[in-house]
Length: 233
Length: 233
DNA sequence: GCCCAAACCTTACGAATTGTAACAAGCTCA
DNA sequence: TGAGCTTGTTACAATTCGTAAGGTTTGGGC
Image 1: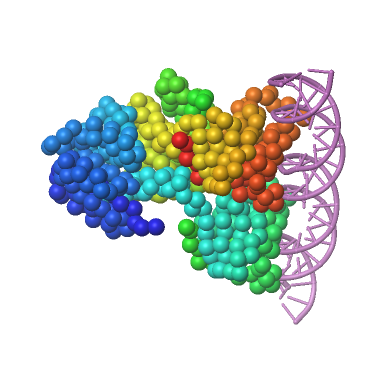
Image 2 (image 1 turned 30 degrees about the horizontal axis):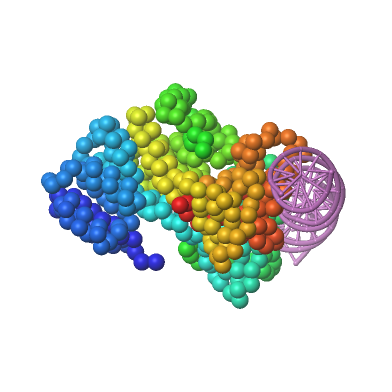
């Protein structure tokens, strides 16, 4: 997949470059426009993934532009505006914007909000619930583990919870308490054995050597560490 | 389609009621919770369309909750927080939140932002009468399933109800309780099994491998998830 | 080194949950 | 009325997952 494309429409050059710099640094492609007409011309040939639009434009009312963008193109639209009244924000959102950021803003937050938009888009179209680590592929859609040879092993929901927890925090200590909490059990007395069993079963499916586990490491008296170079896709 | 359901999780009662009032007036159904544990218990039986979550909870770290919600349930999450630093907002968004609103807020804006989230969800899901997913086409006019080769399989009304429910909320947990409710049965004892049978029959028509279903996934003790890239037309 | 208690692992079992085939009741249409 | 379809019900098979029980490992004290 190529880098997502972000369009920036603002009449102040300083703001355009500030946003473009931050977004490019975050790995996005960008296109900048100072006037609505230019922007619309570009829309004929390209469809951006996210549009950042300033409402106060010299040559057009920004709101109708937003409305058309959202409605016709289905693109994600984030309004960036100096108008901070609640009423402004509400009408902007009602007209189809997905977010409304007020000037002055921190570029870091803008990047985060752009990412949030993309993530949502992605999750409805793409099935990107998969992690690769040390020769294994864990697919959380099909609840399947796939080894290097392509052989598949299904894992259950409970096992998946543990696995996911590990894959989300690789190479960090995960205490028993955190596990209990995440895995939705009240911390009980004999209940914590359930945890062990889950991990035992998971280890088995990962073909861990009981004497010398390579992936799921026990820290006596503390918790577990998942050692593995995780790559989510 | 019934009114969208919005969950509110905040430890201050005043804020809960303020939000609930505004949302109800706007036509949403609401559920309020003061503690994360209550909220999570409710998630076992219901899937809200949007979750409003305060980060400063008495009994749990809100961020990990948000993370799980967004990742596993696929629900839209809006953080409502008193922590106004850019860094807070960025980490919240990075962890999976779709929006971040700072206290104090205007309920009107919250409603607008909730609407924005739903609009997005809906636009990919909105009910036409025909849905495409993973090579299949389900036509609700003719009650027919069409596979990639163009071969048609009729489905019945009861099967259609289940299928529609799945296609309207893909990639989200649908609890048994919600199913019963939607499929018009009071939750009875042996009545539960009717639902299983419906799903079994639907799976058969979708040619699911019983050992390894790819589209309709069972979550033991919780409900079902429909995995499929749905496109309504 | 040796001992011991605590922590942890594994196996087996069983209760709860879910899948599905087979039957029966109800409906539709000729 | 009867053939054909839909759908709930029942019964039994299969799966999931916590629990108990016994074995193994760890680390500290002697």
